[in-house]
Length: 398
Image (cartoon, rainbow, N blue to C red; front, side, top):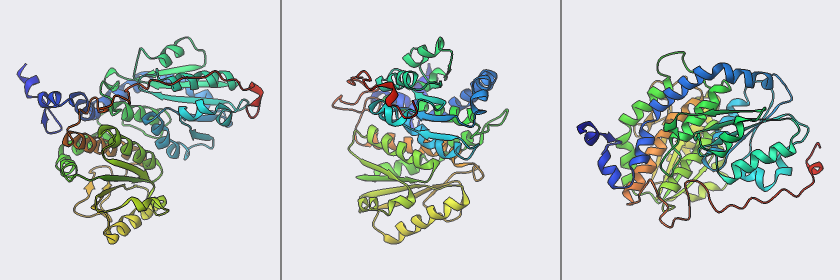
């Protein structure tokens, strides 16, 4: 009983967080290194079944892999595509369910064997279910891999009796109770990256990205609090390749948890110069997720130096796993200097989540339910799914 009363998360007593309406969000950010260990244990237990499903599909050089989801779940695909595209030559694309549903004839190919990989925290959002059903109808040879956090979700249920579908149900702790996707995002990203070989975890012991995230939760809290207390009106996240998808997720997390009161945007370091840099003023924080890839990193560091020479931003912060090119005020992630960028996304997102939560608390927002107006929901509501009235032979390749 006393242990529960004394429990602390992200520098706060849990009882205080619960009174502030942020208890679940704080737990679900703070627990991620431990949850990732459970995800990896699950993958080891199910490795045989996963391989039996994926191996024959991946042996087909004509296979098209479509990574899909909505909102945060879509950004998992955006993180994964650059990593998976470095493997055997096959088409890998990230197409949000919101695009697939709005224009199935633009994105589905009837005669191309397709693996639709659906990421879904609840597994019951209207677009996720509709994308699954449209692919079934419009693609002749379609298989489904569903990565979800909810045993009661519609997608999970669909897979139970489907001969060409496999559902990976993640541990219950990944099914965030709070509004914002935190543990669910990182755990689904880890699971998919591991299943497709983009992340290779050790057979036993702590994975380096988990250790890095645990150290960050402990040591970077003062920096995150300092940034939150600075009261920036605008925040820009920048990242290349795998970290570009992460920049999108980091920006969305800040928008969600501050109920839109902090303007957050994203881009790539190279793309930022082409107009979006106009957003920078003396109330702007710019955060760069620096790549471990030696070639990509040169471009990242060029922009980092340029922004600091410009002197227009209130602050420019680099998150990096390597010490070269960064300054004393930047955040150096220990023990991950050799990690591929898809691994870096895991501890990096923890910092972005932590900062977003602290910013939310500073603004007096109840982070577990941040939409004061109630117009943004934990599971999207108010979406009408219309029947597909196009002829099936309108789909390219039919």
